[in-house]
Every structure is written in structure tokens, then in C-alpha cells.
Length: 64
Image (tube, rainbow, N blue to C red; front, side, top):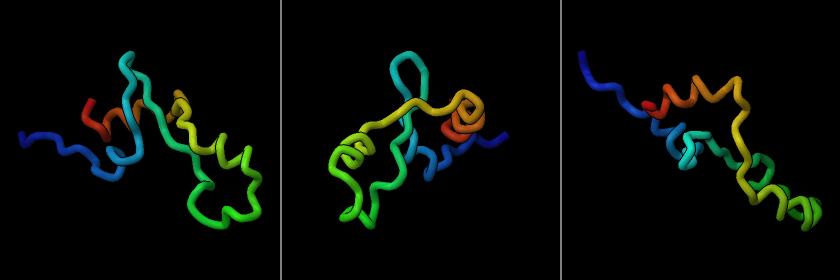
């Protein structure tokens, strides 16, 4: 049986915390930024926890 390969797209988008939870970046911070409020842009910079329903699928993509 060959080794499992890490899904490289998922590896660039998700990070694992020390306790094993997954973190993701926020959407809506790539373009059309002029009309977005500065407070909104600051809030979108921060990473958030991944939804529990998605975590099993993403962990498999990351090889965990």
C-alpha cells in the first residue's frame, strides 16, 4: 500500500493547534478592500476555529 499524500491545497489553508484543533483564515480579505471598513479588515485578519463538522474531512486531507 503506498503512503498517503498530504493534500497540498489543504496544507496551505489549515493549521493544527497544539491541542489538535484546526484553524483557518477568514474569507473576504483578498480584493475590493476599499469599501470595507478598517475594523472589518482587522477582524478578518485573525484566524478562527474550523467548524466541527468539517474537521474530520480536513484532518484526513492533512494526513492526521
